[in-house]
Image (cartoon, rainbow, N blue to C red):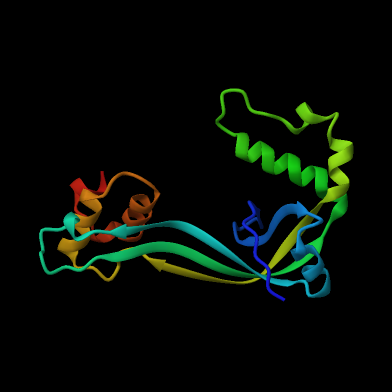
Amino acid sequence: GFGASPLPLLAECDADGSLVALFGHMAIANPQVALLREQPSALVLVNGPQAYISPELLSNPTWVPTWNYAAAAVHVDVVFVPEETRESIERLTDRMEQGHAAPWKVSDAEARLPAMLPHIIAFRAYVRTIDGRFKLGRDESHASINQIVGNMAHGPLRDWMRLYNEERLEEETKA
């Protein structure tokens, strides 16, 4: 069967920084739980920054628009770890609350947790393969990539394009 759910996942890496697993949780009522119990292999799609690149960023009137992006398809084997459900919720919450003025903690809802936890299950998705796909301006001419990056609004896609084209960018574009 096919199932898809947008879920936040935490990366678990080895000592070398290589991705080993993705850790998360979902509602037991999610149809994917039953599917994954029958067939524990899955495909996790990870979307990085992406955006339409308009010709208005360049001085060349014949340049055509494009879509730049960073994405990955991660093939995984899923293992349910119900004994780690609370830890999964706490780790994810702590990560998502980073930078908030008054970070919320799972313990703030301690009275509700006993009723909620039986309806949630943690899982670890062990990475088999990663297929990264990047279209970040590497195919553009030297002049075009400098104009695009130099005229783009600040943000994650611009940051990635600067990183992947660093040796091709002029000093004022790197800033």
